Image (cartoon, rainbow, N blue to C red; front, side):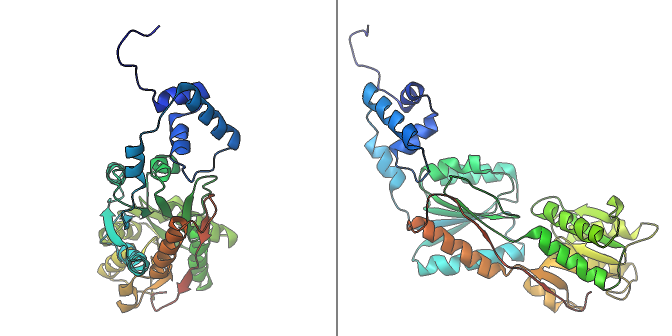
Length: 340
């Protein structure tokens, strides 16, 4: 029996407990989230709300559904030309839609990704195009629950299931196999790989190893050298390979910046590219073709990729697609130049 005085307000937690679901699920139903929720679960939650006399906070709902006409781009490294060109592609579409565009740089660090997420949850944006090294689909649920559209640039295809979470990607394994097969066709069997510690490098290593195995060449871990995701990382990783008793005759780098650093190390060692060591990069950033010799590289057509990511985002915002998430593959192409 309640004591006299004001009665405690029924909360979403109370509804969740009675309905036997999570509090997040209750929130999705109350806010008409685009998440796909079984009708039986939806009805059970509504029955619990009626039974308890739960009244939603209308003011909070309005705050969550207010449009900001702002899109956020989240990238790990704004100094990497790949990401800056990708963001330019996003802005091409955002400008056409008369939205504002803000960019967050995370350095690929978990703490900074979470900090950006916390900022976005304050209701500052309608949509997000992001490159996340640490945040998972589960971490992004609070954004989706607020009907914020989210598109991820992924290293490979990812299924979002019933979540309205869209992904865009190239097949990094297949693209890497294409690059390594090119070097093998040029007569190389001792091929080194320059790996970075973040991003899609793991999938590119898989492609590198598969290409070798498919050509009856046994991969060896000593030919895989890791470094930071930039010129300095490529330089130091290449130096380690050059110190091997039998250095590689060709290099496949996980990105163009590392490939450029490798070329500096090769030249300092008194060796010539491609006569003594061939080099292939990944991303085909603008400066790749300006090098001497010009760098062979896998292009992802990053500006077009950014445009497509933004188009996918606005399709979601405009309700032009089903609730289920999509995973959209984009093309790649090996650009062969003088370095290989």
